[in-house]
Image 1 (cartoon, rainbow, N blue to C red):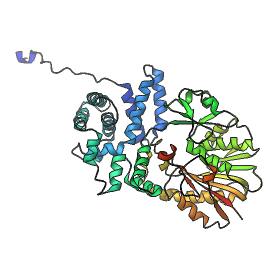
Image 2 (cartoon, rainbow, N blue to C red):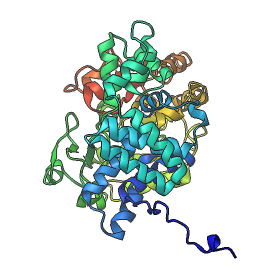
Image 3 (cartoon, helix red, strand yellow):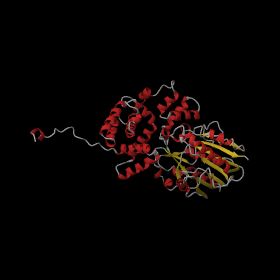
Image 4 (spheres, helix red, strand yellow):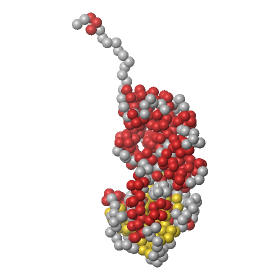
Length: 472
């Protein structure tokens, strides 16, 4: 062996292990679950946070930051993708999805939070080293340094087409909604640009946690004793947790005497319960009862009048959730697993029927921001036959003089007024009830007789309700 071969190698730059940041790793894991498994963040995130707390060293501030990173990245994904696309030399479809998730987290920290730019870049590059490796971390670093050259407004001027050239595409990029969703919401809302911009911006805001005090089991007075709890805006049973409180820490929620329920969902149940019926008022039906929020409120309201609720849900595991929500109801009720399009009950059996049908969920984009990127216009064709079948079942199931409530958590006209108009052509012995007077304290419910709630006007999900009476 030569002398040269015996010489020790000159030490290069020492290899540094990447620093593991549990908050950002958790946020990345949540985004991967949403992308890979089509999971919903509101279902994925809580168990991840709980596991992190159990390990120790993960406090409330960490949980708040992780939650903001996940939801902020998902809500603004369309905008951030447009910005990243301007900073890379290939189509985004050629960038690996895990790399896009890390970049999304970094862009949100740079453009959507108060984290200092140098800290946002360095923390994201460290995350990339941990979850992607050194090679792709260099790519992440290069892209984020380009992103950091402008603030959000500066980037929007660059990547969003001018409003006058293409209003819908401009709004889609600026407010991070697919173009077809912008178009559909604008059609449903009507009115000038200001209204649609207010709605799209409301979709990107973090919704408050809203609780419902189930009558006969809990009261709003009890729930208002919780920290940062204030009265609901419209429902007499609603209480809002204004600082993102943890519902599981509320005793009444843990015991099932109260629940988490958007105020729009509460108002739908209340309007149906308040609608005038002719004759008896003894048997109510919730025909699409899962997961059980409306059924629990309806069951309690029925019990106050001596009426009985039948809650029907097609999927057995969701019927189990309904049974859990109704457990402890102050009056009699029954939960069954049944297909609402092939009902086991006789026609004309019920005095009141609620049919809250499966839909695209475009009215709940605040709570499920990833839904806007998963839905496609063709999904409407898949829901349409089921929605019409379920409304037909509801009208067949109610007696003459009774009332049906057709509800959906989507303001899309193809899922609301179009369904009602088509089905009522087959049921001439029916009439639409003006639902607006049944919610007298709620403003801006639309031109009637149906009602449409909006996030930007009411602080609720965009719930739709039409009330229909059988007249013959």
